[in-house]
Every structure is written in C-alpha cells, then in structure tokens.
Image (cartoon, rainbow over all chains, first blue to last red; front, side, top):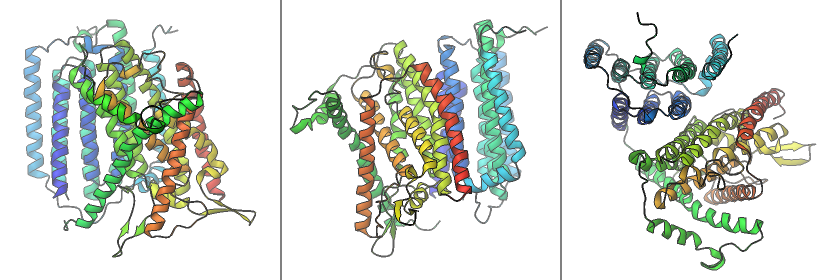
Length: 166
Length: 100
Length: 356
C-alpha cells in the first residue's frame, strides 16, 4: 500500500520536473529540475530493490554531472541569452512526432508487456555487485577507467582557449 | 510489490519527454539535458528487467551506462564550450557551417 | 503486505524526534562555543553580557533573526533565491539518519531497540549522496542573488566541495574495508574489539589506533573541513575577500537557515569521523551490557566524542589561516586524492596480511 503511494508520488515528481526541463526557457531552472527528476528516479531504483544503484545515481548523476552542467551554464553566462523561439513548423512536427511515438510506446507496453511478479528476494547490494564487477566484468571495468581518462584529456583539450595545434 | 509494467510505462513516458525536448529546443545545453533524461529512462528499464528476472547483469550494465554517460557529459560540454568560444552562441541552429 | 507494526512506528518516530531535536540544538550551542572559544583563543572576553557567561546570546540571536526584515534583492530570481537555503538544510538534517549513536539494547518484551534511524545496507553511501546535494544550495544561492561576489563565492566553494568529495569518499573506504560492510553499525561493531599488543597491553580496536588508518584519518578530517566549508577552506564565506560569499544577499530567516545548515553539517561530519575512526559509541575498555544503562552510557560517550571533535573544528578555524584558492584546489587534486588512493592499497595489504 505504502509502496504504491511512494511509487505514484515520485513517478509524478519525475514526470512533472521532466516537463519543466523541456519547457522552461531558463537553462538554470531546467538543470535544477533535472536534478529533482534524477532524485525521484533514484527513489524508483530503491523500489526496484537496487539501493546501491540508487545511491550511485544520486552521487554520480545528480551530484556530479549536473553540477558540471550548472558550471558550464554559469561559466558561459547562458542565462542572459534570450533563446529564440523555435520555428513553428519544427515545434509542431516535434510535438506531434514525439506525442505519436510516446502514445504508441505506452500503448504497446501496456498491451503486451504484462509480466508476473518475480518471486523470491533479489540481492543487489554492494557486495554482490562488487563481486560481479571484479569477476565477470573486470575487462569492461578497466576499459571504462581508460575511457574516463580519455574523456578527461579530451575535455581539457577541447575547452582550452588558444591551444596551438601543431 | 509494484508490477514491472508500471516501471516500463514510466520509463517510456520519460523517454518520450526527452525525445520531445531534443526535437523542439534550440539551446544546446537543454538538448543535452534531454539526452541525459533519455539515458536515465533507459536505465530504469534495465533495472526493471533486472529485478523481473533476478539477474545482476542489468545492474552492471546500468553501472557502466552511468560511467559512460558521465564521460559523454564531460566531453559534450567541452565541445559546447569550444563552440561558444568560436560563435558566441549556443543556439544549435547557428551551427550551420556544414549546411549545403 | 502485513499489518504495520505500531510499536515499530512509534519507536522510529521517537528516534527521529531525538535525533532531529539534538541536531537542531547543536546550532545554538555551537554559536556559543564558537564565540567564546574564539574569544579564548584570541585573548578577549567574548559575549558575556546576555545571561551567565553569555549563554543566552544564541537566544538573542535567534530573536534577532525572527524580527529582521526579509529582503529579496532586485533582479534576483525570486523562486530559486527562496529555495536555495532548503537545498542546504535538507542534506544537513537527513544525513544523520544512518549514524548509530548508541548501543542496541533489549527492551521489555524481547524487542531490540537499535539507536539508528535507518539502518540501511548501503548506509554510508546515503551520506555521500546527500553531501553531494548540498553543493546545489551554494551554487543556487550564489547565482540567484544577482551579485557578482555571491556568484564567485558560490562557484569557488562548490568547485572546492566537489574536489574534496573524492578524497572524502576514498579515504572513508579504508575504514569500510576493515569492517567489510557499508553499514555504519557494522563499522562500529568491528571497533568494539581489542588489539592485544605484546600479549599484555589491550588497546580498543578503534580505527584511529591502527597505523594503516592514520593516513586515511588525516585525509578524511581535512576533506571533512573542506566539505563543510570551514576554515582553512571557507571560500564560500571568505570574510575578508568576498564580503560574505554566497550568503551576502540573504537576511533574517534565510540566512539563519544557511547558518544552521553549516553547523548541522559540521556536527554530522564530526559524528561520521567519530563513527569511522573513533569507535562510535564504544566506551574504551568496557563491555557495555545490552541494557538501557549500557545504551545510555554509550550514547553519552558518543556525544562526548562528537563534542570534542566539534571543539577541534572551532579550534582549527581560529588557528590556521585560509589557504589561497589555487593552492587549495591543487592540494585537493594532487595531494589528497593520490594519498587517499595509496591508503586504500595500504589498508588492503594490511588486511591481506591479517594485521588488522
């Protein structure tokens, strides 16, 4: 009973703040609404019995990536720019296309994707995830660390002013 | 316990909102944020199925998706900064050098 | 779902009331300690007019906060300006939920009373997650005030906070490795044992007393100072440089909320240091029995340890000068982060050799 209430409350928060993200004209408010949406999604992850990933979602997404977004918005002083309204034809086609896509997706999921509830506990805490990461998925784990290094170097080079390319 | 289907429907709704944002906004950073919204909707789908079939692979995949999305956000924002240094605007309609 | 156990709910509410009440009372006590302690260090009397030893000064301050005019600057983003203090307050109030503050004891009727509001499996990750949310309070406050000093203070301080978050997390991992679990109750239970040296001396097995953890203790304490924006890392406020940093334009209750959230975050960080390194509620050389008396003694021991640590926070603030900003960032990334990583390897080696 309480689970359903929590689910509906946080699902509506996620959806409402997602709408604010795409509709508000000020990028700072969009970014903060996205943070709220991520927080609501983290609660969804807890409902899906993955508390470790819920904590990771808040730490990585809401706590680091969105701070990066906010820094870039404030660094470039983007809130002062008036964003020109999108051309009407693009707006119309965009809303129409995405609405059609969304309605079709939700309809077919509701019709065909009914599944029985899983039985038994699902142990997804830090220990089991850690064991799986370091045993079965050790190669992607190491490759992701190299990928992050490449991303750091790339980001530094791309955003530096006055870099003399040889 | 909440049926998995409800999580899939929520994920579909969030994904659609992300698609709408990508298609109808001109500000590059907002488009990027809509892309992050789409990625999170997909994460939710992975976790819903991971719980449904009691498999850890879904969680590990979400873990890697988060790490890669972080790298992508960093590099994408660096590209936007570089674009801003050249053009003084983040409007994606102004980045039209390759238009024929 | 089975029926809700009313006694469980009542006990949880009682725990929440105790913890939140204690945390809300930290601010007036810390204000007094700060002002008299700083006066002691600087060889001056400090506030001593309002009540005996100036003890009612905090009440006078609270009354002043209630009665001051609430100004919203022209050009500020009204909505974000108003909710920014809440971004700082919510993490400060909720992170204390996973910290154990006493020994679990058995009530009449066989029920075990665990003095921790939420004994999560991923306990400490909640603290790190909510600590990273507190960055938003500062950034939003700095930006929405429409004031360049606030913006500078906000951005510098949030950059510092996210840099030292890494060192904080990695150095806490070594204490978690020793305990083998992310729950803070397990971390404390592991420290209730004893180290036996040379078959004669019995030391309590607190993490701070084992040599492999000294480095992580230092790194964690420094990162805790940086996370709560206390000197020598207080670029958010920077009294002499940025007017008042990110809370320049805030007055009366909104400023009071920032003020309170800083002291509550300080108390939570001190509680975390005590739990990870100083044995939490463990009384050294005494096995507390699982009764109400044992619980009371362990809770008092916890409060004493946190108080000593809070006094050290105040002491350091008025002793060490502020670091220059670029040196602070350099030290955060180039010194503390590698030290934290090296420490993980060191503790892993100690655990493999069974010296811990």
